[in-house]
Image: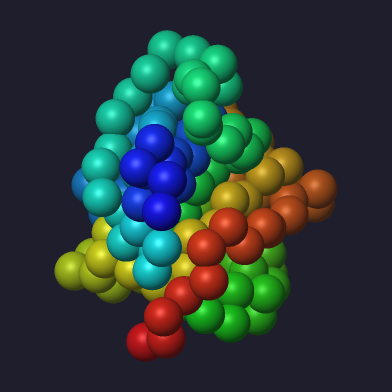
Length: 128
């Protein structure tokens, strides 16, 4: 085993959704099972070494059937995304596992999905 490789992934994005609110310029350390180990903010998260950067909103604990869940969110895109995510993801498990996804193509001012919104799976869920 190479001791210089950390036992986690470091992922950065424009925003991170949590039940407590949206974190700007997040850098998260993610365990192999999808648990968020650490969250920090950094003014230039896309420039950190050994860090994957994804433009959009990171969302932990997303349902395993992420495509169907995302389609349901898109069907309600007139509602604020924070409200939709709060209804979809239980607040007691939001940083403990599940799928980690990034949602891109957002209107950031009101934080709403647009017609261009897309979802990408970053870490598969453990099943809920």
